[in-house]
Length: 82
Image (cartoon, rainbow, N blue to C red; front, side, top):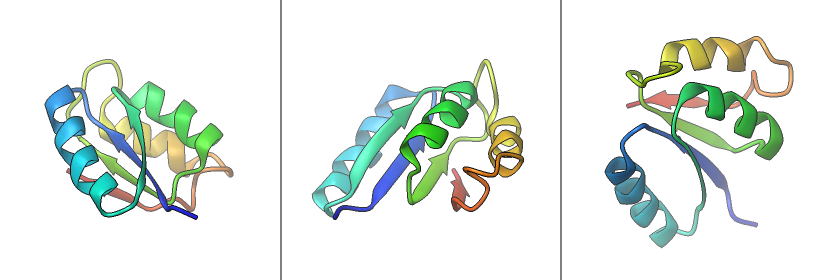
């Protein structure tokens, strides 16, 4: 079974670049374009890892991280900030 990675960034080019490299290495990729989407998608998809931009409109990476760690469903998912 493929490991699942959620990429969170407001710049489509960054998501595309990371997706290409990670898919090439046999990871399943999920995308979110802001912190609000991240929290919702992470709770539904339960990725193995989240790669998250810090500066995003609507909800930045730090605020999204706060939502993730305060949710019993998502608080164990590792998050790497980009």
